[in-house]
Image (cartoon, rainbow, N blue to C red; front, top):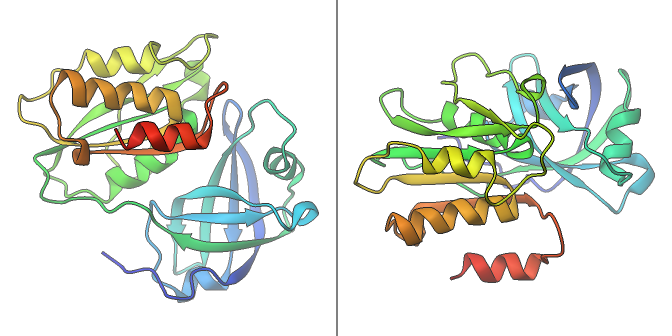
Length: 245
């Protein structure tokens, strides 16, 4: 597995080559950056993009696909409701625009010796999950599910990546007892604990983590949670505290 370069936190620059809606509310931006050609980057890493209008703020996006030979990478951005700087930047971004970013960096390393892997995510974590699956040995067993609001919101599976089934909220809010959590509970998992990678909304991820640890007896260290956002009034500090339990 390629190691990240020591200067990963330097400011880098790129230009938008392509803008395309590839699913309901999901925007693809293809970026050309010479740093991508020169560095050993891996899927599953993420970068911090600095919108021009808010140079002290940044939003993290996971690489969806990388083409080092062409010096290009794809980002998928969920255009959810809201008026934050990240959404405003993505909605206004056009082909030819320059971007400033830092990274990449990675907070998780796949265990190729795990007996099997379980993955779960809603739209905001699906890109990271697909990237992690792409890093697994072909013989590794995988279980899991992905969730979108409607079938139109399903993200395409990159070439060479094994797909997971999708479930749908159908207008219901993301929930700790909703479609994704129920789909994971219904999985016919082996008795032996595996490894889990859960990404997306914090409360939903914590609900699945609690099921695996408290009901199925998985060791805490076997379950990795990558919370990308928090719904409701829970704070980041509360999420960290729950992850330590």
